[in-house]
Image (tube, rainbow, N blue to C red):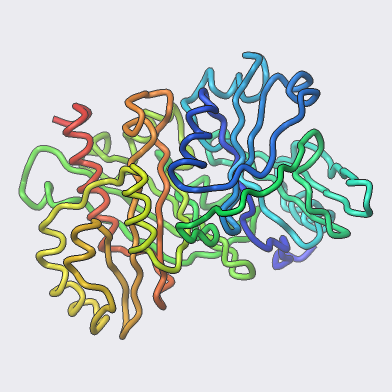
Length: 385
């Protein structure tokens, strides 16, 4: 089979979380970020698998949350080794049999053969999983044939409430993962998934420039599937002070490499962030100095100007980056779960919210701002001196 053969990925459809406290997750998704509860596992499935499942959705963003009932279940075994986190990324594909054949030919480690579930009305759901170098994370590929709209075997769909997604979430923009070394992941993504390089950056925070005795840096590479636009941003720590990097800290807190954050798109980030703050959602802080020099940065980047009032962005702590005339992006990061709940078992994962206004990049200048923000949080929590 030709190396150029495509996987036929259409989109990142779902992320599957394993959590210790599903009630806490339910409150976050329904009361804080206004996702709809669209499905749940049946009692029979709960008993067979030893875990219970809830499915939430806003726009095209779907999140599946699983809590173990039995410590020996798949999610139970995972949570013995890790805090809460993403266990599986689910990709919708055009032809699951073709995807399977391409991955098999390229040497992917396939967990199971394609399995089909009929909905009784002519619709069929085909799926299979592979292992990955993303820690213990797996990738699942699904095909919805014949108009299949269900949630899978052992799951029941629930009627949608009247009003949800008032914060305007659209879809997944990208997934960011952290490793102690990028090489194996990059090779696997290129040789097995057929991904291509999209963007890269490496830097250290200003601590090093100040000749201090610590700092935080990273090397980041973004890989993508140009046919679907699915993007993976991947980080490793950068010397000197390798073990001071937030990338290293994440891997230690996560008890292994894994998915650090997922970005959700919105068409009006100012309205989204205002609404979320009113709901009690907590974001990572941005130093005030960021906004003091923002006009100069905007000019230096060649953006030429932005539509938003910088003082409004300062008040909401929204970041700006871009390249090229009137081409920029706006982004903000939620506080990581462990800090949000003051519970290490909640894990170091967080969400990003992003609005793209002509810029398809990753906000290189904002990587540094994010790192400085995380450093502030680590100092406040006692992780950093």
